[in-house]
Image (cartoon, rainbow, N blue to C red; front, side, top):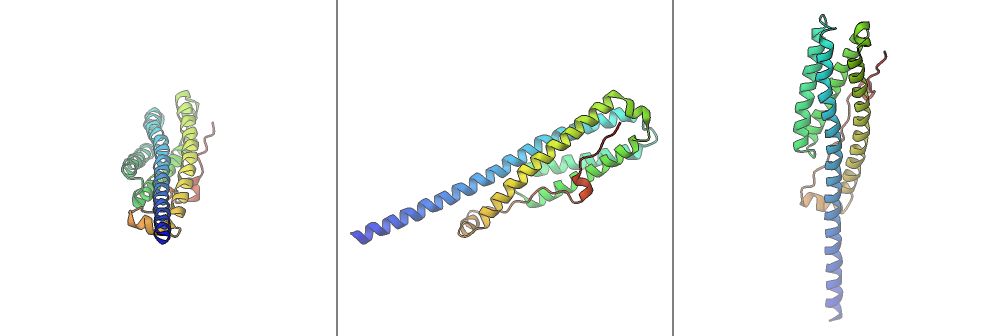
Length: 195
């Protein structure tokens, strides 16, 4: 009878531990999804501001249509990648595609800002100044949200890879998550706007 009781206690402890590990993996995975949702909100704000900026600048940059087209194409690609990643933030490929698309958008915006420097009347326009300031503020919010997301991904991946968690993670298909990274050091810097 004593051996049976000890065996039942051991089984109960193992079951409780497995339940704890599973629940912790679920909690961490949900924190990653929530972190991505915060990025998603800020990226949507960024993507919504860009068409307004381009439309406001069209009258001033009539000779720079290529620059405006480049910004809008990069924006549209980033929106597509954002929507794709939002459907499954746990998919590493989609997160990497989003990082690449956002990197291209940042480069296109940097080029736009450089061109805008050559047009004093554009720089003096209050609407454009306000849009550029809002965009710069949004870039900072994206950066903070991305940092929180990346911290969540790191915690989830570390917990998922530790033994014996990795066995349970494999059994229940807890896939690794990817951090949202920008590809170049230039893209890691928020665009500088000087008027």
